[in-house]
Length: 230
Image (cartoon, rainbow, N blue to C red):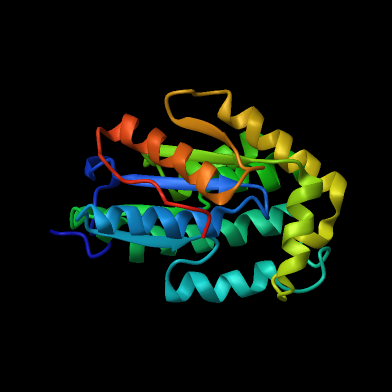
């Protein structure tokens, strides 16, 4: 008898076409992700841009719980569980169907944010995060993770300049974000084939050029870098 709960996709069999742009808040992930999407579209590649937390209607509902309000309203474990509830529906409803359809997926944040924010900066420990990750995600991994790195003091200045109400994590303070930055660098050092760290404390076009070159080399593509600093 066929199981009624058999998953629609087998993640381990999906094309390796997911690229993640990650890093501390204010590192320019959103801007660089949008420019990268345009480069893929200009090259004639079918591509979607998504984000975490969020990326599907149900996951966006959970995002509102995480990114708004008092920084102490959730502890690190509650944050982690909410993040993985969001991540599971994001994968199920957005990422896995796109990959199954042969599309490229660019994601502004993914699982390394949970490792950095809750696992290391939040002091849950990477082992705890990995236990939840294996249960929720299994063996599925992106093809490439680009970490945008810059001093947390500059990053926090950028986030404050945005002036939106999605500032719960930013309000955890400079020491917390210093731990987050160090955590991303620690994670990236574990697997140089999966991770690339790029200096984000430069002009937008310079950062974009490095990202584009990294992706072209990794996937043997011919994407064109952004011209100028728009």
